[in-house]
Length: 231
Image 1 (tube, helix red, strand yellow):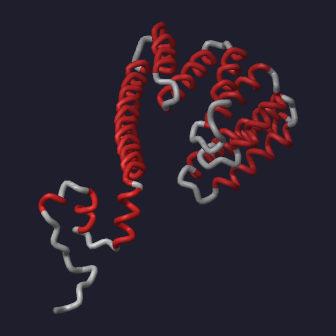
Image 2 (cartoon, rainbow, N blue to C red):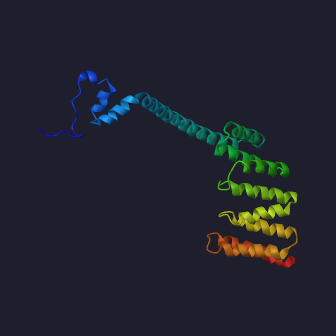
Image 3 (cartoon, one colour):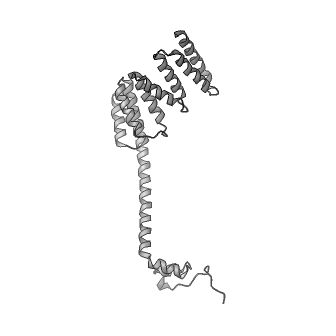
């Protein structure tokens, strides 16, 4: 008779099939492993039950999160299409109801921009500061918030703070134009024309090779000539 190996299926009596040990024997586990599992089966059952609960809860949370994101995006789109008088109320509702979502953050940004367009720069600044406190520098919205705050500082006469924010934007891909033209504008306001020209010349150097270079080059060179005449 050939020697039995762990790959040979053992015969299990029908009356033992409802027994955990009998089931384990069908897998040809070593006797010590079967004994250990049988001895700790209560703990094992508890752990398996917890794992099952966690999986179910995570699945439900994922479904809830996905639904919340879909609803918040739809609500934001509706709020953005609202009439001017109703827009802020609808945007505030999105920010409040869907707190923690990207749509809620975008709603807050739009509210701050509307307030700024209405000339309430101090209030807009406070809203931008509140939004910035809730996001990281890696967030795609961070540069946009910096720009909004720079505009508010510029309008409020906080030129050093505005300049700091525009200098920051010069280093962010896609925001270079806002950074260099903003800083040049601050220098122009302060009648520091050489510095204003220098900022625009630096921007021309940064733009070389970009698709928009030829389109913006003429406008920037015209502004440089204008600044030269103001010296």
